[in-house]
Length: 266
Image (cartoon, rainbow, N blue to C red):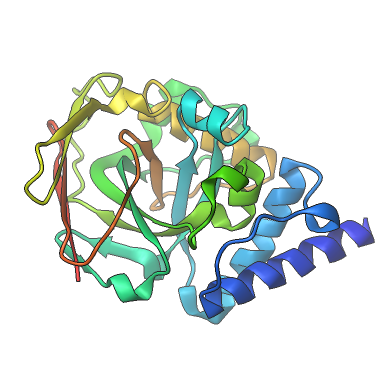
């Protein structure tokens, strides 16, 4: 067990240094590679402790990634992954995002939820009705992805997971508390990037219903003895393909019945 903990700490140290110094992402290999997802989350927790101590602040919530079967297959996984959203990474719409603050900035297009009451481990397992009862508000949102110029042909889910699932922050649209009349399995969404024609999808592109992502996260955290706390934000997974930003880009993502979120890249 000591060897496992030492290996996890060494990988967390390496990932932390590379993030701080702006070095490209390198997939863990050989003896430094975690032997399981549980070990991977141990590395992530250690890395996030280092981020918090270095000034990112307290966790403001979580992101759920790899929420479509196609993306899971691409990265060799049979389930989603999660990561932490730090309070210093939370932006409000309309946001101005400085490209120079990132190595390789990607945008993902999501429904975010604000938790109203705790998901406690002792109350697990959770189901869809629990999610509906515990969500205070929903909102359109961007997740800011930092892949550090990763070679996507040479990474897998475990590699992404240990690096806090590449979560570099979020942009949140106005929260709406009157969301329960929406069919979140089939609510239309649209994305406008600059003057290009809008791209469209439905909220159900994330695990059939974004609340399914929330249920998965709450149960996954509960299995590790962690409470998903009231007031936290959960990013439930992207409905459209990730887009990497360039200076001058303007992104507007709208969820029918919930409004829009906007960000400009400077």
